[in-house]
Length: 128
Image (cartoon, rainbow, N blue to C red; front, side, top):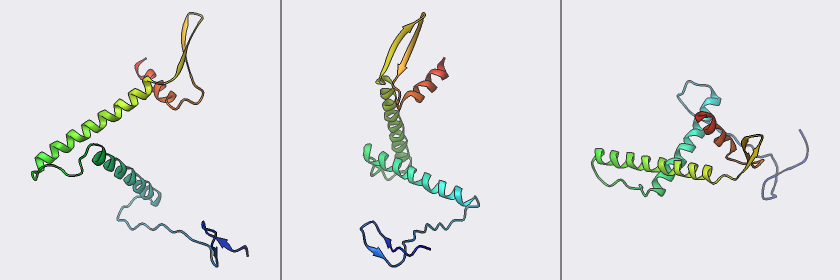
């Protein structure tokens, strides 16, 4: 163990080093690493839930009837997915590419670090 004192983010010298511990109590029977993955996925789910509520103004469902609220929520999820698909399609349409013709072939040259290249490649291969 080194004799140098530990220092926190604000520059405060500590007598003992900071120790961070994550503890999960669960009744799941899967491995501990799978529990951590599920917990992270839960956070992603919460993020999408928050976007759905704020972007589509579904903070409060309109009726006291379950069936009506179920219909409104399903319509909201459908609209949200359409907006996400529209964004992906728009990004693919606006992707920068140079068209080259050589030896009777038409070639699309994408930027070296194009973030959408792999997506376009998968779409092309699915329909080619």
